[in-house]
Structures are given as structure tokens and as C-alpha cells.
Length: 542
Ligand SMILES: C[S@@+](CC[C@H](N)C(=O)[O-])C[C@H]1O[C@@H](n2cnc3c(N)ncnc32)[C@H](O)[C@@H]1O
Image (cartoon, rainbow, N blue to C red; front, top):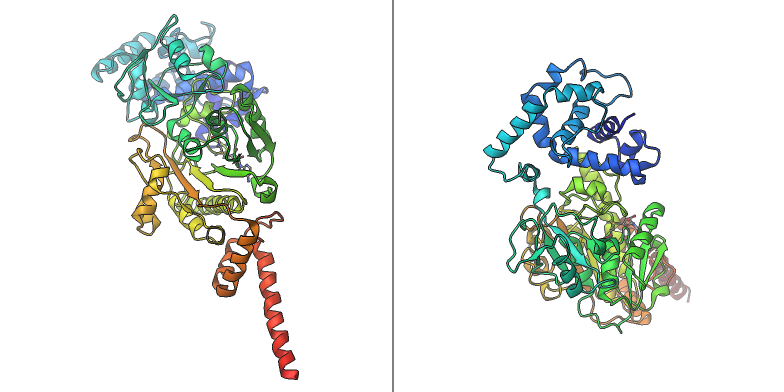
């Protein structure tokens, strides 16, 4: 199968929601997958064609190309062949939007001949459309049609493990194609300009289509392409870090963008324990950490829920950015590329370990069930983190905009027994990027405006980022295990209802120094009851 047929087959695969982008590349007959040379080439064509599909498809329809050339692009294609619609799409992309404005195939290949018969008209129609829309160049079509994704700036995080901020700016503003550093933020930034992010010192903000794949600082890990919102959790976690306090856990680390930011915020010193459960994603994590020159990260392929809190007595801060629905991610097309190694032309990380599919409406019941499962897993992660004996700060984040995974998880976490036993509460706004205007939604937090102010939301299309949510749990003093046990047994005497609630939620057994599990607490309660019964019997006998 040739290159165009492979790309069209991959798009068919994505259109019919048959699986992940990697699966789509495999379906296109590329044995080496998306990481091989051919795979990368096909993947790039798939993404670029999808970006311009809102222009290319109507253009082709206005010229009735599928109809006029139906012999070459039949409605019904033989089994295993790509659909005519998507074959035409990728060919039109290369003719009208590729660098060389050429279809890279033999002039005698019938599909190319068919498209070339209409090339002059197609180009003329595109110019007309460009003028009508007042666009300065045809690449601006990418921004058309309320394409929120294409309006999100390209955020460059300066990785201080490799290069310092001033040196990076000096590199960027010199060389053969220098960028111009401007003082005033404008959204989206003008091409070939950039400005300092108004909220995060480590970030520089560029025009959305800026490419860094040829940039030497990108190649050596000095530049990390990371959506602004995705930088918030590490920043909140590491607020007022003095280097002496203790160690850090990143409970859900791959692909490692937040881990490497934490590492840099620690000056590449101290220790970060990075957990990643998935075998495949762990490999990506290792590569990303090496590329970002993280020397203070101990990565483990392990399930955070199975970690024993008592084994991490020095850990004072924990980041949890668990799997979520990814409903906040709008630049789905760039996101197709974001898979560890393939980050060159992307601005946002892959923030879900779900197989990647093009967004399509989901049945309400299916969605509710999926969110329910995700939310209980997310809560379980927070409850586990709350048991770490020296922990005093837990940051919980998602790239979801659904209340079920955001405020409601926070509320449930605040009401869980671990929060009560260990004295966890929500950090106030002053500790959670106070200058970020958009906060949580009080309505989802039982109307509590103070709680809502303590968390952060990002809304795609309005905040120049993907959709995101960040919260931070704190406790004043890390209490000793003995204190906690004493407190717990007092509470147990007082509150039977909480135990039955715990049963419903279900917490994993833990054999560490943290609080005893619900089942062992229940056993204790039963023992106490038996003891009481026994003593009353004894009294009666006497
Ligand atoms: C949303 S992604 C994390 C993204 C990462 N924080 C970053 O910024 O690059 C969630 C990750 O957590 C991992 N994960 C989910 N449950 C886990 C668990 N119980 N223990 C460890 N890793 C887990 C998933 O495999 C996935 O790689």
C-alpha cells in the first residue's frame, strides 16, 4: 500500500472509532507502528490532513470531485482499500497545504491524475476563500471555524535542569531565524514573536503553529513543550520548597512532564519517587526523564495504590494526576502526536491513558458509568496518598472539565475518613496560584465559595489553555502514627455510621505504617463488641 493509501486507511480507522492512533497506524499496514520512519511520515500526514479537513472537505464538495471522478474515487471500495473520501482528503492536503504543494506519487497514478485534472480550479477556489475570509495566508485556515485548538499558544517550558532561562531567551532571540521577545501578551501571539507567561516564570509563549523540532534546545531537553495548565500542578505542589523538607512522590508519572518539572523546581536535587503502572508508558517515562536530564528521580514501574506508606517516611508532598476522561483536551489533533517521543510539534501532553479516539458523542449512560468508575479510582488514589505518614501536601489534578472528576472528587476526599483521621483540608486560594482568576464552581462544592476559591479551573477557548483542574490538600503538621491510631480509635467509638460508609467505598488493604484498613478496623470493632458482650455475660453469671 502506498503512503497516501496508508494515511487514508488510518483516518478511516480513526473515523470509525476503531481504536487508538497507534492502532490506526498498524491498521494502515505499518508494521513498525507510529515510531518507525514511515509511521512518523504517515502520522504527520494524518494529523495535517485532519487539521485542514474543515476546509478541504467543503472545497472538494463544492467542486463535486467525488462525483465527477467517481471512476477513480468510487463510493464503494474493495475490501481493504481506503475510503475514496479520505484518499481524496490526503491528496488534496498535499496539493494545497504541503510545503512543496505537490502530491508525492507517480504522475501516472490514477488518483493523482484525477486530482491534478482539477488542480488549477482547486487552487483558485482556495485563494478566493482566503480573500473572502480576510486571511493573510492559507495556513491561517487552520485557525478558522472556531478551532479553539489552533488558537492555543505553543508553550515552551524552560527546563532548568539543562539550560537557564536567560540563556534560553538569548538562544531564541539570536541565530538564523530569531524570535522577537515582546513585552505585552497578545493572544494568539504573532508568528516569530514570544512573550513571558504572565503566571509562570518558567514559561514562554509562542504562536500556536511555531515548530521546535529543529531547535537545538528542544533536541537537548532544554525546551519542554507543555501546555500551560499542565504546568500548574507541579508549581502548586512545590510552592515554598526549601530543599530540606523531604522527598516527593509523583503517583502517576508517565509520560513525565510534571515529574520533570518537579525535578527542575527542586534544582535537580533531593529525591522524587515516580510511580507508573503501565509497562509501555513506563518506558516513555524513562526516556522523557533521561531527555530532561532528571538526576533526582527514581522511576518505578509500580502501582501507587500498592505502595506502602510506611516505606516512604520522608515523603512530604505527593502529586496525583491520575487517568481521567481527558474531556478538557481540545487540541486532539496535536494530541495524536503526543506520545512520549513524538512531542516535537505538539503543545500538550497526553494526559489520559485511554486509547486515543477522535471525539464523538458518547451515550449518556455509558458516559455516566465511565465517569463513575474514573471518579472512584481518583478518590481511591487521594485516600491512599492521605495515609503517607509525613505527607503535608497533596496536589490532585485532571485534564477533565467534568465536575464528577473535579469538584465532586475533592468534596468526597474531604469527607473521607482519611481526611478526618489525618487532618487533611483544602488549601486556601493563597496557596494555589492566587493570581489565576478562574476558580472552581461553588455549586459543585455544596455552594461553598471558599472551597471553590481554593481550586483552579481552566476553560479551553477562554484561558488560552486546555481544560484543566487543580486542587491541593494540606495538613498543618504530619502527625505520628501513634497519634493517628489514638485519634482513630476514639472516632471509632463515636461513629459507627462512618464505618458503614467506608465499606461502600472500599479501600485497598494497607500493611504499612499508615492507618489500618477498613476491614481491620471493622474486625477491631467486632472484637470490641464481642468483648462487651462477653463482659455483660460474665456480669450476669456472677
Ligand atoms: C494522566 S496520566 C499522567 C500524566 C503525567 N502526570 C504527565 O504530566 O506527564 C496518568 C498516568 O497514571 C498512570 N496510572 C494510573 N493508575 C496508576 C496507579 N494506580 N499507579 C501508578 N500509575 C498509574 C497511567 O498509566 C498514566 O500513565
